[in-house]
Amino acid sequence: MDAFLVPLTHAPPSSVPALAASRSRSLAGSPGAVLTAAAAFAAARSARSAKRGTSRATKGDEIKFAPADSGDDDVEAAELPLEQRAQALAESLPALARLRGSVVVIKYGGAAMVKSPERTIRDVALLGALGLKPVLVHGGGPEINSWLAKVGIEPKFVRGLRVTDADTMEVVAMVLMGKVNKGIVATMGAAGVPAVGLSGVDGGLLQAKKVDDEELGFVGEVTGVKKDVLKAALDKGLVPVVATVAADAEGNFLNVNADIAAAAIAGALDAEEFVLMTDVPGILRDVKDADSLISEVDEGGAKRLIDEGVVAGGMIPKVTCCLSAIDDGVQATHIIDGRRPHALLEELFSTKSSGKQGTTISKC
Image: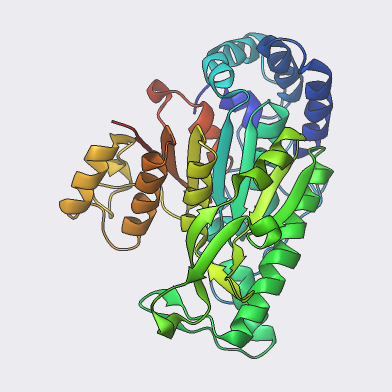
């Protein structure tokens, strides 16, 4: 693991509010001031327990947000030597300096939302405290499935895509725009970073129309993004948290694929980075061999991987989303395993030499 991540990602979640407060006092200064705050945040934690397993989201799983002081996310450990912390901060400076003030769009959903969801949310809050401008776009499939079961609606899928009939759409809207979205906002607030919950309906943020395939029901296709809604929140120092429910011209709710919506938002905002959190390590040359991870590829190389069949199945739409974001102006996109503790911080702040854990697709 990158030296920067040893002190940073193993710090206690309860330290995030202190870092947020330190950032508010130091934003008028140089990036070094933020790094000083980060040094204070890099408290006495070492390797995270290796006992935690990862699991795929299944029907009936629920997103359960733990309180910031639950202790469920970290274990106590000895303080790191000062020399190691100083070296870590020095090595992180290029990434922090490059990304400070930049928009980073993160798509969050699936299995990553089931196992310790508050961990990723606090990592996003940390990005805001370090001077980045994160935008979190979330799904909520596991929670939707759970509530469908509670009200006696059997989930239906066609060619791997959820069928959203009128009854299902009601549940999707309530769960995504209500319970999940506000739970994320509350968790960020508890970490000391102000956030605002939005949906694609608010201010016409996501413009959408019903997909041509009538068999899918109330499923939407993104036709535009009103970036002013997001920019207004970012300019106020808020972290936008976006639920991907949109409305058509007649005012009907539409269920929009979160990957596609996040890519469209990243492009509209000219984001520096777009991060797609999944339940796989990234692009694997051999899906049966985790060591065959392709850590970096340009957009031309990614297209060739699709043509060659290396990128196949469910990975094709994810890579396509990344390529779409790049076409719209995003500089770099990342596919990472959201089940990994602090995978988001690893990907954004690690160096190539330290052994990145995800796949970066960048402009040619």
